[in-house]
Length: 215
Image (cartoon, rainbow, N blue to C red; front, top):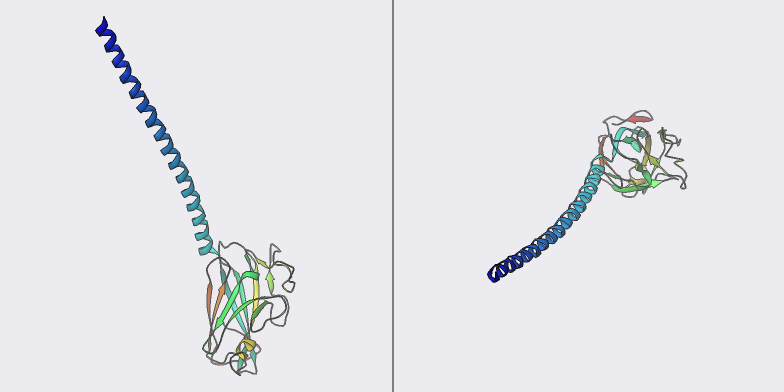
């Protein structure tokens, strides 16, 4: 009888120890699972944000529809008018945050948006002759291109024309009045977010008329 009691006591002691170990293992597994779930959630959020930013960088930007030059005395292109629209899938872009760089063998300039004039440091949204350069704005987001208090948002379907004063830019570096026959001008349109748009403008061998379509 005594031996039987001692045997049962020893078996009970072993059962409690196993249960303690089991509970400890469950607790460790729960903590590990919690950490894994938290890490997985954080990585998922980071991956989604990275994907969103990557998509924005790839899809955001402009398409150059047309480039028109103003011809002066059949010798120079003194002004450029660049017609722009958004690329497919691009979100809306605020022109107040868009930089346009122009460069050729004789000069280079980085231009910001202006509501008052196009000169050696700024470009303006206007057509030849000085009228508004907002050609189409189906969502009415662009506002008045001459008002600094309005937003200047290009959305899908909007077409604008940007005026670049080559004469003023060129006067900073030499005495020429603009681009001459067979010159090449490199234009880079840089939004705040998204891919830059590159355009090569080739001046033809013969200049004539008042306005010429260059590309």
